[in-house]
Amino acid sequence: MTVAQRLDSLLAAGMIVEGQTGEATGGRRRRSLVFNSAQSWVLAAAVDTTHTRIAVTDLHGRVLAETELDVPVERGPSEVLDRIATAMDTLLRKHDLTPEDLCGAGLSLPGPVDPESGRPSQPPILPGWDAYPVAEHLQATLPGVPVLTANDADAAALGEYAAGGSDTRSLVLVKVSTGIGTGIVIDGHSYTGADGGAGDIGHVRVSPRSEARCQCGMQGCLAAVASGRAVAAELTALGIPAASAREVRELLRAGNADAARLTQQAGRRIGEVMATVVCLLNPEVVLIGGGLASAPLVAGIRETLYRLALPRATRHLDLRLGTLGEDAAVVGLARLVVDHEFAPAAVNAKLRG
Image (tube, rainbow, N blue to C red; front, side, top):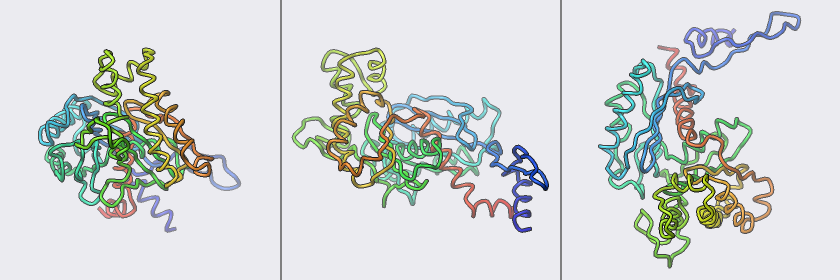
């Protein structure tokens, strides 16, 4: 009786709907009940260093509408967030949606995000963003809509986890774009560390004597010698103009041999650091994502990771490219919002009215 009453309440609230009816086995036909992924929508903004992808998704993370905005994060949080807010409003209006149609919004940033405050936490490549009230800024445009924030690699890892089902207990996603970061998902939950800095491997110093200067101001960081930005700089020095990981990826698609060689070389450096990550966490899956994600990058990572890590740590390891591409962070943000807004306590509050 208790279960029936609870189900009636969830059905009446539109949180679940009836699915297919099964064959009778001597009694009434079996009813399947499924989560209603179309009861409301999620607005997601995946911020990168030079551009932002904004999307409306259903509650399963399926993208229904999207747009892209070219705005570098170095212009500061006020200008960047104002432009994101305007683009969000335009996207909603274009598809006849209002903030009342949303159950929440999510925004990811290319830097650490404090898990308590939801604000950037001393982000190395986001000048002027430290402790900025990102969610509060967007809520001025989205009244009554909860806004959640996350690190971009964390969001992408959660998106890949959601897309792959729940069979994987531990997953690490390495995002290689302008910078390098890792997202960690353990038992379905992002592990962000004490203040949001978990997985920030791009600022591990791997070449202390290198003259390559990182965006954090230090020299010899992994991101300074192995990121998409670093590979682009090396190609430019060879007379092959490239300014970003995206442009390097286009050269890879065109079959440029120098781009493939330098990308694989960058992968070897990343693999050196990832060997430690794998020995520490012993994950089941390591996925490669971001603008530089490619076969040469995976090959380079595989070459050094398996050579340097303990055989026991890699014997069951699945190392491969991510499946979602640029959708990964958007899907992860949708999952983040749904997990928050449809947690047991939140559902109880909604049912009580």
